Length: 119
Image (cartoon, rainbow, N blue to C red; front, side):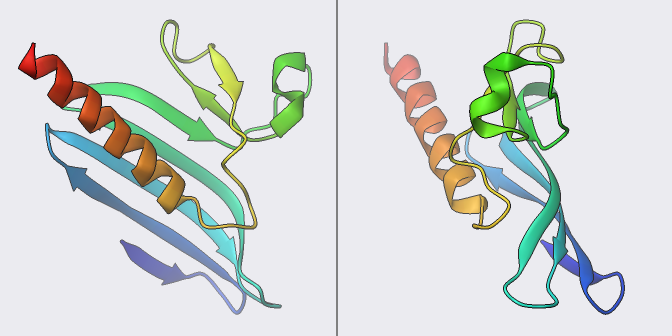
């Protein structure tokens, strides 16, 4: 992960975390850190397995989608029709770190992959 300052109060956090089973998390955040506390201003998180994008989170507003109002603008894109199939993302936030939530979700995915490989 890299933290790149973009001025007196803005930075970009970017990088990838690799997991077992060729799963990786791609992280992109824009954070504002003055005045403190640090808040996330924008984000995109993608989860891949090999060359297949499994799902992603973003904060692009969709105010006309009533299904997303409970967590607006936070949502997750999932198959099928991953670009247009969005669900609420209650654990993702602008004011808390999101990496622990994303890593727990990937750990659960790895457990699922492992249990399928045992069958």
